[in-house]
Image 1: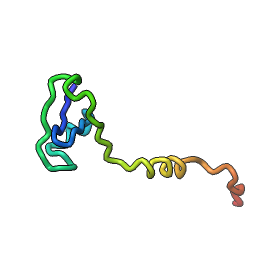
Image 2: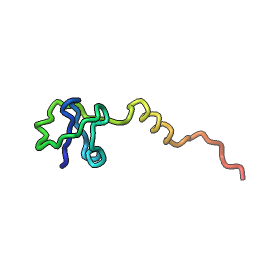
Image 3: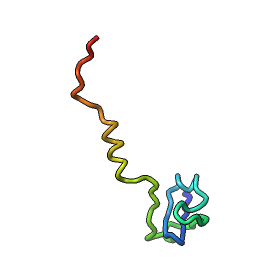
Length: 72
């Protein structure tokens, strides 16, 4: 598993993020490879999405049950 972190921001990144990022999106420093998960224990996980927008996206994707029948 690829592990990278930004020591100055104390952020850790998922494997998917590590595949695309070369620098920290917060401070711009280069991401550092980490040999073990133990080395980044206590670092926050970087989450690029705003958590407030995710429930709305799920709500919009739900089907609407009270649609009128098709009048063909």
